[in-house]
Length: 365
Image (cartoon, rainbow, N blue to C red; front, top):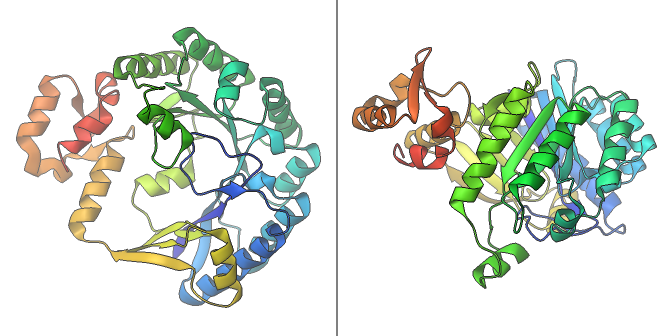
């Protein structure tokens, strides 16, 4: 039984220079056909899998770049096809520039329970550097529109380690975010991903990465957000009690999930596959009744073990001690260094260890 669904909406009004997710400029001549293709893909998947969603996540791209009528078509399609009585969490990612009172009200009325708002920064210069289409004021207005529409579970996405960003700018962004009292805050360190404009500028020496500075940004986020009452339940995620992301926790726990849309990945049992990374090809395949799958692989138990370690170590609950029994020397060394500790039968990262999470995980892979 598939309990977790991801839907990729690739359209963006503007392409951000740091983003490595599959996306394309919004083409209004294609969006209705795209919505029809998603519906056809869903029907295809229902012939292969029993689906009873507990979580649904619309990511992108910018899902709210679709019109109100198109979003209504997609969401109503889910309501017709599935019994949604067991849905714990239905998230839609949104950019502040694409939120309206009508759209927010529609999403809430059709069953969406959670909005992830891509603010990234409250500093106008940094927003311009990131190529964002919204201003700080638009982001704040969008947040209030979502509250008025009845959303009581809002995540705000933030980024640190940006070129030229100062600790003071980061501190002010965190404090501004806390003042709005969102239920969830995601704080990501900028990474220079291939096939992005930022990567080219990094490769040419225009931008540089400073691990020590990134560590200071990370430590600042932990201190300020935890002091404000947010639980640091995963390396990049903080939540009020009871508001950690159910959908993301399903990924971290290695549960099966089904991906719909171009570039979307699915993992069911010991098989993983990815859809074609081109929305035009996706549309043609789905509307023709063909599989949009572009690649697949059979997972091994060793691959599953490695993923479980890498993902679980990032979480507050950590990894079972039994999963690391082959690594007694490494665990003892990390404990001696103050990076790892035992808690409730699990190994969990210490505060110091969280800043070095990737390096610790690599020792067990």
